Image 1: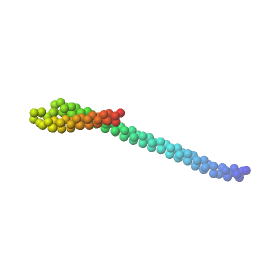
Image 2: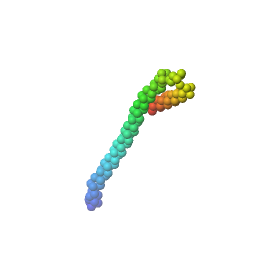
Image 3: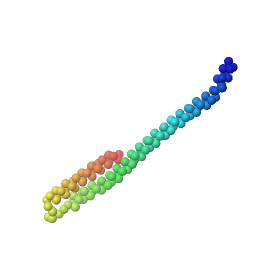
Length: 114
């Protein structure tokens, strides 16, 4: 019995040390994986924040351009006596197209920035 106890105690200290190191290594690996996914989440938050800030800038510019289209409708029309009828229709169609484009762009920018 004394010989068996001596053989058992011979490697027990090394075995316990190895198991402790293995457990610490696994815990460290888990902590590193948690930190890695936190970094992924932070990157996604940064990308979304970048999109929101860009859409806010687009919204300001599109609102200004909508105002320019309205100014062109009211004050920037070609003079009726000096231009042809087809020019008025072309002017109206291009201005309406630009107005609708800017309106749609501002609407989508509002939805993207929320």
